[in-house]
Image: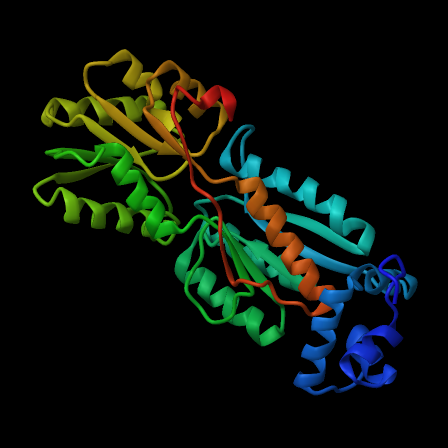
Length: 350
C-alpha cells in the first residue's frame, strides 16, 4: 500500500491475518470477536491511520453519539469558565465525527443540585461522561452506577481513586501541593503558614483540593517540621466577612508571613492584602485567571501554579470520543498536565 493511499478493511485484514469479516465486526461493533482479534485490529488502525474511515462509516450510517460534561456553574474569568473553553476546542474535532457535547451545570457547593443533574444526565443516556469530582463520596456512588450501566467516564481537574475511570487529565494533585509549599518557603525555615480555604457544602464532601493540601503538609513536615500551619475558611460570596476573618487572624498571629491557597480564588483576598501590605511577605496560589494575574503583576501575589483547565477538558473529551468511536483506550490512564510556575517577571510572556 502506498503511503498516500487510504487504508481499507482489506489492508487491516492483511496486516492482522484476520478475515475481512472479523475486521468489519470490530470496526462496526457487530457480533462477538475475541479480545486478541480486537487488539490486533486496534493496533493496525493506529499504524495505518484508519480512524477517519471509521468516523466516516459512523456518519454514513447516521449514528449519533453524545458526551455529557458535568461542570459547576461559574462566573466570567473563573476556573470553570476557562475549563469550558475546552469544549469549543473539542467540538471542532469531534463534532464533525457525529459526536455531540452537552454541558450540564450545577451549583458547586450544593450536593442536592449535583444529585439532580446526575439524574438528568443518566436519563439522557449519554455514551460517555466527563466530570470533575467535586463531592468525593457522592461521586463514588455516581461512578458505581456508571460502571453498572456501561457508561465510560473521564475525570478532569481532580480524581477519586476507583477502578472504573477511563482516564484522568489534570495536575498530579499531591505533587502540586508539594510544589506549592516549595514555592512558598523557597526551601528556607518558616515558622508560621496560613492556608486559605473555602467554605463549601455543610456535609464537607466538596473538597477537591484535599490531595494538594496533603502534599503541601508533607513537604512542610519534611522541610519545616517546626512550622505551625493554620487555616482560615472564607466565604467566596461574602467579601466583608472575609476581610473581618483576615483582620482577626493577623491580629492574633502577627508573625505569619506566608500564605497559600490551593484553588483559583486567591484573588478573593487581594483587596485586603493590598490594604495591609505589611501583613504578608509571600503568597502563592493556583491558576492564571485574569484577576490572579493582575495581582501577580502588581506583586501582591508572589507566584501562581497554572494548570490549563481548558486543555484538561478538551483532552478528556477527545479521549472519550476515541474510546466511544474506536474502542481505543488512552495510552495512559493518568495524564498529568505540566505545572507552570508564574511570577511577575514572566507573566507577560505566558
